[in-house]
Length: 166
Image (cartoon, rainbow, N blue to C red; front, side, top):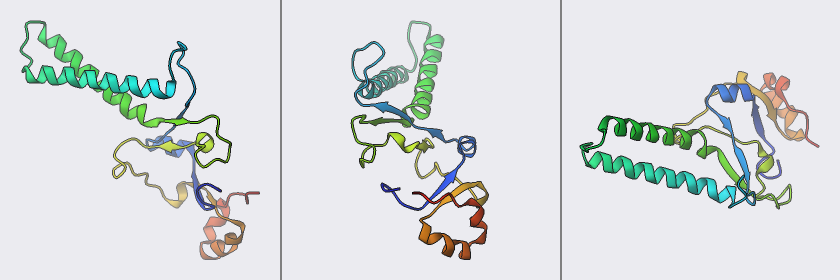
């Protein structure tokens, strides 16, 4: 609350996941890969970009050649198409949900993101809108001094007010 705002809305994980949202995968910036070589924070994005570039190049070569080759063209087209589809899926469903954090930062540091429990919806930010009604709101978070005026203005909010933070 100190970092962003004292006002907020809470939505359930069930509602979020039913509407395409997923929790972020937090990767410690100094974590090494399982092989003990390299940084996960740098290695994963680099490897995915390299894979994407290779697939794009292969797809471009195949497109420019009109898919006229002496090898089994049907199988190559199928493999290229499958690889590009898998790349798109991995980018959309995994890469957009990775957030690197500095595990050495103090808990209340402005750039410490680890405990945020962020959820995201992949896609163009303009198109990836979460539509919800008051019925979907689990908790309403407001400072103590705003509780009574809010209840006076919107009585149905009383049942959804989160406990007053300490």
